[in-house]
Every structure is written in C-alpha cells, then in structure tokens.
Length: 323
Image (cartoon, rainbow, N blue to C red; front, top):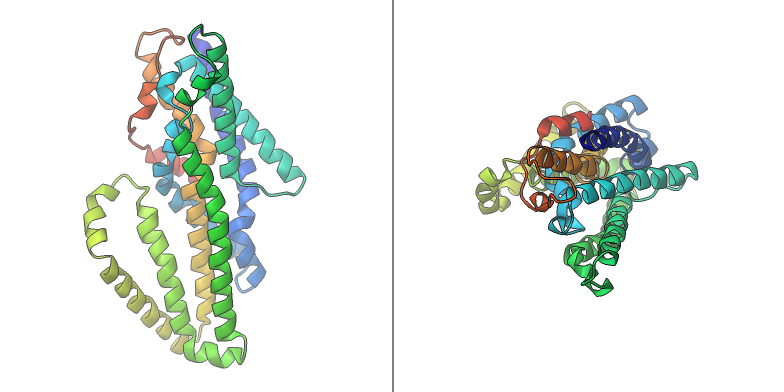
C-alpha cells in the first residue's frame, strides 16, 4: 500500500512539470505581450529579461504556497489518503482545463483554475465523507471547507480585475496626456522624470511586495515599515538621476528601459504569484508524504493537521521550478 503513495508522489512530480509547461504557455502572453508589441526590444532580449524575472520571482512565491496547503480546505478534517486523492484530482483537472483553453486559443487565469479545482475536489471528498457518516449532514460541509479564506481569495480575484482596469486606464490616460502631442520634444525634456517615476513604482513593487514572500522578510520588516517614505524618495531620486544621465549623456531612449524593467517586474510577479498554481499542490503532497511516512500510522487514519502548520520553504525546489 505504501508503494501506491510513493508512485502518486512520482506522478505528481510529472504532472507538475506538465502543468508548468501548459501554464507558462498560457500566462506568457500576460508579461510578454506589451514588450513585444512595443517593438523597441528584440524578441530574444525580451525572453532573456522575462526568464530572469521568472527565475528571481520563483523564490518570492514561497509565501503563496499556503494557498494549496490550507487556503481552500481544512486539512485537519482529512486523512492522508484522502488528501492525496484530492491533490491528484486537482493536478489532472488543472492540466486538462488549461490545455483545453490553450487549444482553443483562449487564455484563462491559472489562479482561478487551481483555486476552483481545489475547491471542487475538496467539496466532493467532503461530501463522500459526510455520506459515509451517520452523524453528519450536508449542512456540515462548512466544517471541511475554509469558507472565509476561500471567499477572500475569490473576492480578491474579482477585485483584481476591477483594480487592473481602473489603474491601467488612469496610467494610460496620463501617459497619453503627457506624450501624445510633440512626442519627441516632451520625451527629450520630461522623459527622464516620467521614467524615474515609473521605475520607482516598479521598483517599489519588486522590492517591497516581492520581499514579503521570502523567508527572511521577518528580519527586515521593521526597518522597511519604519523607513518606507525614505526608501521610496531615495529610489525616486536615484532612478530620476540615472535616467537623466542615460538620456542626456548616452542618448538612449529612457522609455525602452521602462519597458525592459517593466517586463522583468511582470515576469517576477508571475513567478511570485502564479508559480504556486503549478507546484504548490505537488509540494504540499510531498510534505504530507514526508510527515505520514515517519508516523507509522495507517494512511486512512493519519490526520493532515500538519498542513495547517507553518512549513519551512525549500528555495532549491522553487529555483528548479523557476528555471
């Protein structure tokens, strides 16, 4: 019986690789489209920049791994064998769904896919357990599902659409207002200031938001929170001065640098947020198997409460996935 779960772990690793391939092909358009459409950076260089962003962003995804472990369901209500069946169903369903949409040329959200796969698999397993129980009814389903966290995640997905649309519209309007008329003259006079502001915003996202997913964030959290304005002001001064030098001395269009660093930031965000969609479930399954294999308890009796605990991240696995 033990060998079955070992084979399931092996199968989940294979499924993770396939899911990475299918998922990245689905999401690549999100962080490559703008740079490719601008036609100011070669396709080869865009891929290099994006690859570096994905590689660096992989380590930032550790904080998101909790979604697969306990974000949707209550681990303590399930046993090891049940959790493994849930994880297998999630990975197979996720790959089939993403591949179906890719085949039709219809990009979809990998986050929506993994969240609802987890929710669906957990609900079905919970209903099976309830059906086999003499004391529980369908009304007890909420005991198995982390409803509050699931609502937060789903609300966040919907809210992100509204925020993205609104912020994108405002930034586009300001950009067009500044550069639409007498473009070359305005870029020459004000381009370095605009680029400095843009790079500060991108740098803030990479530096402050990205670090929250790293294991060492707790060590520097106090310093960052106490000196946020000073750090932002320093970044603005640094980027504006650097863009001024690049523009006036080296005669390089500073907006090209904004596009390049923006592509890096988007790729980093993709890896930091969406990497969990592809490897979060297999990593949770691996941690579950590790805990069960040393317990000496039958799989059908080993509670998965361990998934509710904080588990140290494994940067090596994250880097492998990112590369």
